[in-house]
Image (cartoon, rainbow, N blue to C red; front, side):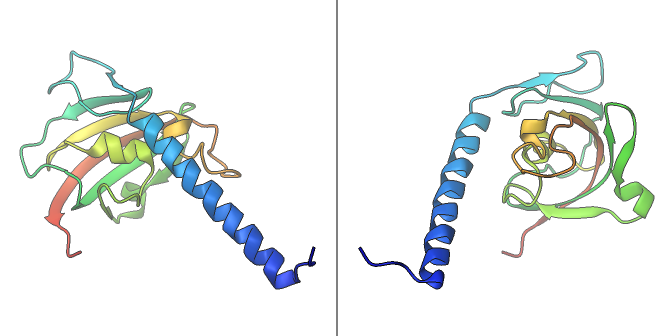
Length: 162
C-alpha cells in the first residue's frame, strides 16, 4: 500500500471533516424540526408564538403592526442579550447600532431564526434560548453551555437583494 504524502493526508483529513460537518448539520436540522415552543406567559399582549424549537420560550412584550419577519427577508433589530444571572453579554442598544441579517439563511443562531420569525415591525419579544439552539453546537464557544435571554425589538423588514 502506497504511503500518502503530507498534502494527500491533509486532503483526506479535510474531506473527512467536511463529511462529518455535513451530517451534523443534517442531524441538528432534523432535531430542530421536531420540537415545540413554549409561550412563557399567556397573560401578556399578543397570541402564543408558533415556532418549532426545543425548549425555546418566547413572549411578546409588544405586538407590532408593521411588516412581518419571514424567511428570506432582511430583518433589522435592536436587542439586549443576557445570561440567566442577568449579566449583559451583548447589546446592539448599548452600541447604538441596530443589527441586520437575512432571516432563514443561517446568519444567526437557531433560537433567533425560530424566535424572531413571525414578529411584526414595532414588536418586542423576549426569547429564552437553550444552549442547543444557541452556541451549544459550537465546540469551544465561551457561551456553549449557557441559556441565553434576549429582548428583541423588530425595527424593519425589507426584501432581500439576493
